[in-house]
Image 1: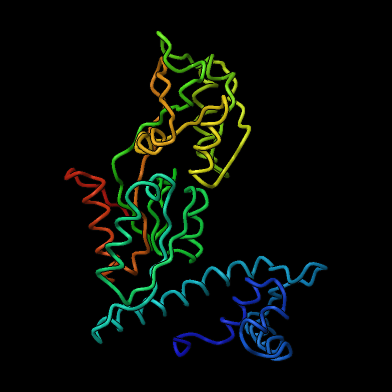
Image 2 (image 1 turned 120 degrees about the vertical axis):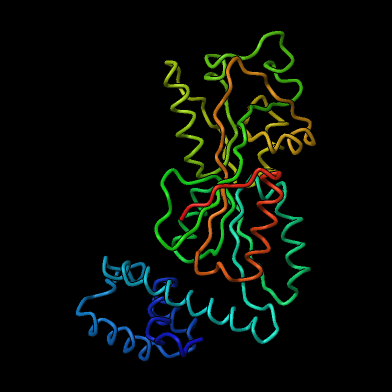
Length: 309
């Protein structure tokens, strides 16, 4: 779809991604002098410098960050045009890039993605698993087309649609032999504040929520001794130690399969607001609509989700 956008934008984005002219030239299949000339033409057109040379490579200027944001939109728009017109030719090709939050990836994502693959055999799927704090910026940056994860505190900007799904309650789990399990009375926040926690990497939402809850009662936040991007690693670590972990109720079956048990608490923890967010440009793309219908039908249990743009 290079007919729909300038090769200079392609070169510029390659430099942003590679961080060096040499690597970007290799990625684009051109010589380094040709890439340098292409960059200079862009800089001349805008009247600004787009990169500064540094010992570790090319550093984007503030102007480059602005251009990159718009260039990604242009390239993605061209990709969406190609996918939709491709469907008119009787195919279901293209690439759908999905961001799956920890809860969804460990519960319903495998079956729904498999069904999507079966319904659209020519569709290429990429699935990136992570916490919302990592996935949502990638959606805004043009690296993902749809994200199913916990909702952002702030509404997404124009050009994105969000459908809110039912929330899931947070709970605490530990190994069966943990001192806080199977007690006659629920565990207090004071006791939990002294516990060691295993959690997810870069989960700032957890940090924010725990800090707010414990600070409101005058307690310190539990210490996180281990962080993992893998749910399996997290559950295994909890099962082999006296650490505890905060998990969404939807992940209770996975915790149970690893021999973990829920620790009853004296008060409810917070709930996680879940949702699906996607680029509105893709609203007519059949594979996206099939995935949205499956997610909403599966997660809302007939109650319906709220859509916002």
